[in-house]
Length: 303
Image 1 (cartoon, helix red, strand yellow):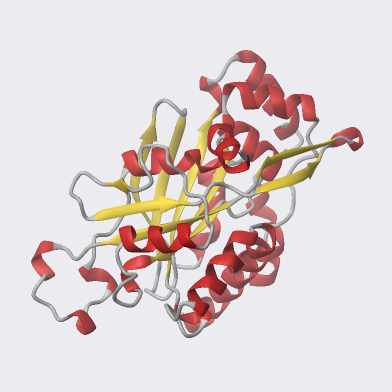
Image 2 (cartoon, rainbow, N blue to C red):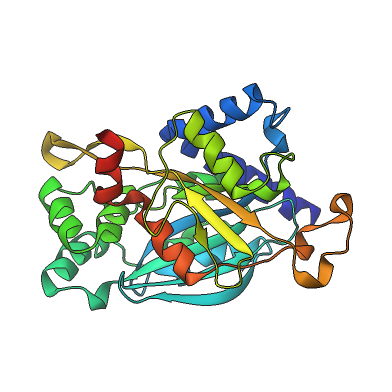
């Protein structure tokens, strides 16, 4: 298993490298944390989870992408349904606590209008077989390269804008493909004074970070044990087919505070492990976190 852990570390490093380059807020937040003495090194940050968006058609979607992570020891966990956004999702538990949880969602294409389905399928029809079946999953460098390789041609701006009108998730994924949607800082693992989401959100805003306020800046699970917030997605100048360009939503950063489960409240702070904290995800929280890439949030960011 040691070799698979090493391979998984290579994949995660590759994902984070490109993600950090596309999302300047990552470096801004880390630099702010170092400057404020919240952390001493980058490695002090625990990555709670990462997330991917996919298109739910027979050769793609969760059933395809999950093959990578299940191969490296991840365990498929709870199912989530997002009715209004026409999405399904699962989360995956890591093989070892030093790795992040993974959240993979997929767009239920058949629930969109015929016009939107036609646009999406005009791109995905280029895929004749599950791309994971041709990938050497034992080669972490090949896997990392795959996760940064477009699966279909560069979209037309007109197609992107038409999808944007009906499903902002659809427009995001038709352009961004498997780019990492976000990574998540585990706030509860930070030093006192910054280890609650309320405190950390205040710090973020003090360094000029814009937070997604859909459903409130702090999203709280029904049991009160999982609190989440996120930045508004970075705007990127995207190149489209026929030499057109347009400013679109890229990726963002998320923050999670997981509280200790009632059964483990008596365990000393320095003895608490990941298993002692609230695990999993919450549909109502995630539903609003998705909106970090939505036009309404981005427009607030540019005003």
